[in-house]
Every structure is written in structure tokens, then in C-alpha cells.
Amino acid sequence: MKKIVLAYSGGLDTSIAITWLKEKYNVEVIAMAADVGQGEELEPLHEKALNSGASKLYIEDVRDEFMRDFVFPMIKSGALYEQKYLLGTAIARPVIAKRLVEIAEKEGADAIAHGSTGKGNDQVRFELTVKALAPHLKIVAPWREWDIKSRDDAIDYAEKSGIPVPVTKAKPYSMDRNLLHLSFEGGILEDPASEPEKDMFMLTTDPADAPDTPEYVEIGFEQGAPVRVNGQAMDPVALLTELNTIAGRHGVGRIDLVENRLVGMKARGVYETPGGTLVYFAHRELESLTLDRETMHYKDTVAVKYSELIYYGQWYTPLREALDAFFTTTQRNVTGSVRIKLYKGNMIVAGRTSPFSLYREDLATFGADVVYNQQDAEGFINLFGLPLKVQAMLEKGRKK
Image (cartoon, rainbow, N blue to C red; front, side):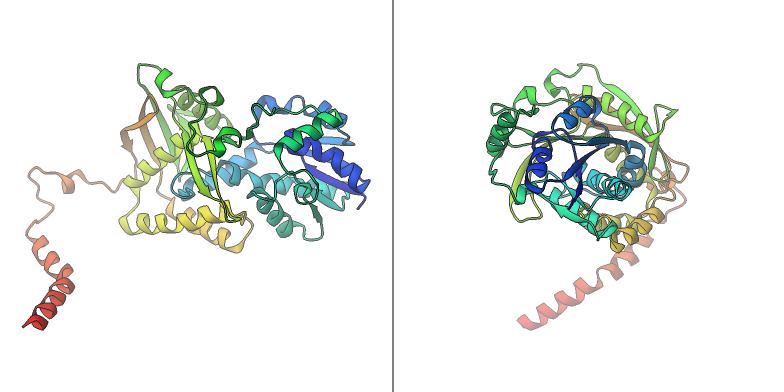
């Protein structure tokens, strides 16, 4: 190998990886950081990457692509991993790896590298994307090769090599941030009995400290995609940024999860997903108005598989594409608005409207109506319950 493109975040693992790759393989290392909404984290990366030994650094703005082509399809699917995790880290990996491959091909590189550990899910997500898009590229995973065994060892290596890193042994959290979420792992969180420290959170106010007055927000959708906040049309990046601010100040979007990693172990993660939590909630409320029962229930079943494909790094697969076609069809009439009241970490639906609503007040009313003949229910119940009646008759006959 002569040239390697490294997926670079400026965090502990990728910072020391530049130096290690040059020492181990005597190669040119090009760093690539994908802007998926990390904000101020990107500003110091140029100087930091070059000082660590990279020949150059690409900072690629993929925020709009991330939202339109990855996050929004996931929202439409309703996918939640193990019923809680909104897949904030997992859904960002395929777009980052896709741009990594594009830079590697542009630079004529022999290989790509990443800073994911051998215990985590991200190694799978990065590498499956590379295999799907550029199978000729070699893959280097330093955590699977070097003698560094822990985050403390990595911090010692950084100090020895004069590499500034954003973590310390006192606060060794592994964090991942993008437009959709901020995740925390490591440190005291490795003990699932330990409550997260109050000052750890960065995107959400502690619900106890949130405003004492509720705030209402209205989210408008077109064919399943959020397009408006409080009546104002917004592009995807601006929309989620605004909802992150609104939901965050009311303490909405905190998740504490012990999850089953793909590699087989359980891991504890804490996630902040303020705007995403709000959009998921509103989207579900709108679907309750616009989807028929059979479609809605089957969609819930399929969403479990879709969440696994995202979590397992299988975005670039025929099955994911096929499921996207299904979800797109289900969203044709998911257009309308949902109004939500936010109060101290809670989301309370305050209204739903849609031009494609399947809700009929004249059918659902408890008042007098001329549409629904309640006497028809008797025949329906007799037929619907016929298998139960036959089974009971059989059992009764056996006892005689």
C-alpha cells in the first residue's frame, strides 16, 4: 500500500491512527472528515490532522445528502432498533463510508482505514459499505492490529506522540455527533447501574430544569417527509436544526439503552436525539390518521427488519432497496400536520390533520348516526368467532 484514506473525526482513535498508520505501513495518509452536522467539532480539524501527519484533509459537507437520502427514508420506515434506539450513529455510517470511497477513488488510494474498535458495530458498517461500493480497496482497521488494548492505552499513546485529543482518563466518554443525535459510551456508563452525570448531556436540558410553561410546535409532512415547522417551509438540514433546538430546551429526546451489538455482546449507550424524537413521534401520529389497519400493522413488522439492516451496516443491499420501495408506497397519503405540546421531557399530541384522513367522525361517534348499523356487528362477531366456537364444541365433546 502506498496511499490510505482515513475516515477522520478528530477523536481519540482516529487522531492516533494517522501516526500509527505512517509508522506501521510507511504510507501517505489522507484524512477525510464528513460533515454530518458535528458543528464546531470540525473547525480545528485541518490543523490537527496535518500536525498528526496527514498529507491533506478533506472536509466533505454531506449534511443534505445525509438527511434526504438516509435519515428521511428511515423516518418514513418508522425503524427503531430494539424499540428504543433511533439509529443516529448507524444511519450516518453509510453516507460517511460512501464519501470515503469517493475520495479514495479520486486520490487513487490503495486502501481505506477507520478508527472503529474490534468490539463495535461501526467496523462492520464501514467495511460492508466499502465492500459494496469498491470491493477492490483494501481495508485497514488499526484497532484490530495494534498493541493498544484500551482507551487509557490510546490516551497514553497520544500523549507520548504529542497528539492532542478531546478526552481524558477522567472523562473518557466515546462520543459521536451528527444532526440527528449525540451518543455517549464508556466511562461510568459501562456500569449499567450508574446514572449518567448531569453535566454530560450537551443537546438537551435536564427535564427538571426545563421551562415551567409548555410550548406547542406543529410539524408538517408531505408524503411522510417533514417539510414545515410551525407553518414555515424548511430544507431538511434547517428543519432538524430548528427541531433540535425546540425539543432540546424542553428535555425531549434522551434515551438510556442496553443494546445487543451485532458482534454478540451487550453494550450500554446514552443518546440525545431531540429533533429526531419529535419527528418520529409526529410522523407516527400522522400515520395513525392516514394508514389503514393492515398496512400500518404490516409496516410495523417490516420496520423491525429495516432497523436491523441499518444497525448491522447492510444499507447497500437489495433487501434495503426493496423495503424502501414498500415504505415509499405506504407514504403516498402521509401528508398533513401534527401539533405537539412539549413539557419537561414529555411530548403530548395536541392535534392531527390531513387531507387524506381515514378518520370519519360520523362513523366513530358515540352520538346518533345514520351511517353505521350496529346490528351488523352481531353477524360479524358470529363469523369472526366461529373458529373459537368450533374449538370449544370439540373440547366439550371430548369431556363427555
